[in-house]
Length: 358
Image 1 (tube, one colour):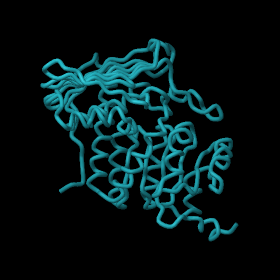
Image 2 (cartoon, rainbow, N blue to C red):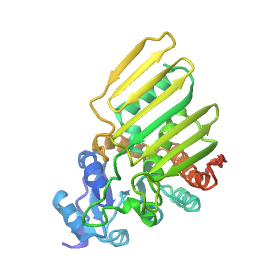
Image 3 (cartoon, rainbow, N blue to C red):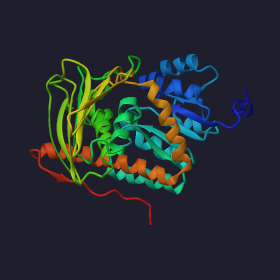
Image 4 (cartoon, one colour):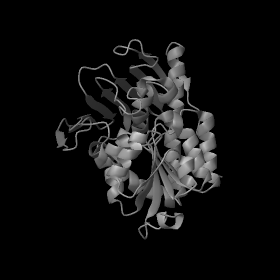
């Protein structure tokens, strides 16, 4: 088929995109929502692994497979990219796509370099494109209820948040490529502090509605003893008028997410499918959820909300800035947490984010 024919499949009114990286999170997390989206349509898939490109052709009839983003951009007329590759590749992919005028949806961590973050932010602003990080845990039913309760003032001003993420092992990648890449710092950028820490750091920022001011951390290895990355982390994050305690491990005996929010008028306890809200009078209100927070690593049911907010980010520059400030908070805290651990858990201050606002 000639170029004109290949580019003539766009559904009217939809934005045409490429899914970059066709690993587990793309297949089991992104595809369901993208297939049914009224706004976004996947025209191409990019993956360096031939087996994954073949899988994409089988799951997405008519999709065009490419070995690299550059190869896709030489042929396709795209409006956006959805980046679902391992962390080390995010920087270059985001910058390349932004320079081609494409809106960018990117898996966490957005980047692990403050210098590259600034480049990514500036290039996206220069080309007036949305750069939107995939902070998918914010779209879980239990967190959406949790955030609504805080916003409504059900427990008063929140002054402390405790979050615990327990896993029995790393989440493995595809067998056709590199199943244990999360234990390889040159690809993953770090251990559980990067993999699950990024999730927890955007959650506490969203719950408190404030930018962090300081962090201290201690890390260790209790299952992956010989790995060059940490499997267990405890860190304390300071906010104006509030504290957040985060505990994360890949060395647990079960799989669980849990936490407690302490407010001046009560508290909220939650664990995967259950939540209890207790007021000053001691009375408890209980909630239950069908969607189990720890059920799997991909959560396809949450991706529709991400696409909704990606569409909003495309339309609203102010909303884009909010998302990038949240991502900057995650990045700065992770970098400082590693430094804090190396300096005996010393308390370190967080620099303020840079924006393009006058």
